[in-house]
Length: 116
Image (cartoon, rainbow, N blue to C red; front, side, top):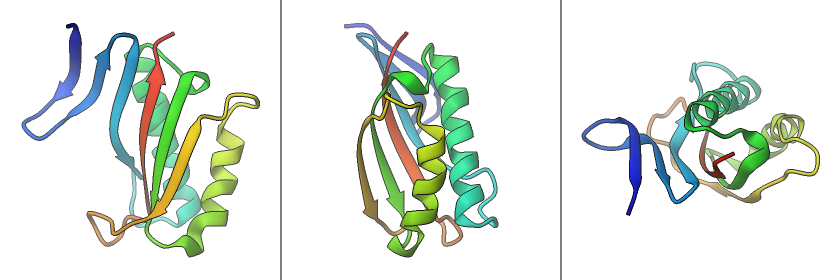
């Protein structure tokens, strides 16, 4: 069994690779003081960087689970998401309202992707 863990700390690894599948830990905004649009964009920028580091890209995302602090942010988050996802490459996705680890966070994402 070949499991590769990148950027591993005591609690988690930022990237885990197994049998051609890439698992990213939950990603949040670079600056939690910003609005939902900017939090979503910077969160997705971090996903892009991690996918590249792991040997993939957004066209190879298999599934995404998005956690939103309040569903009143759903439309604004989706506007950023829709512009970010390459046409014809939408992954399986779930989106749920959830209590965030820090009060200022509005959105978090967990991603599973295929290696390129």
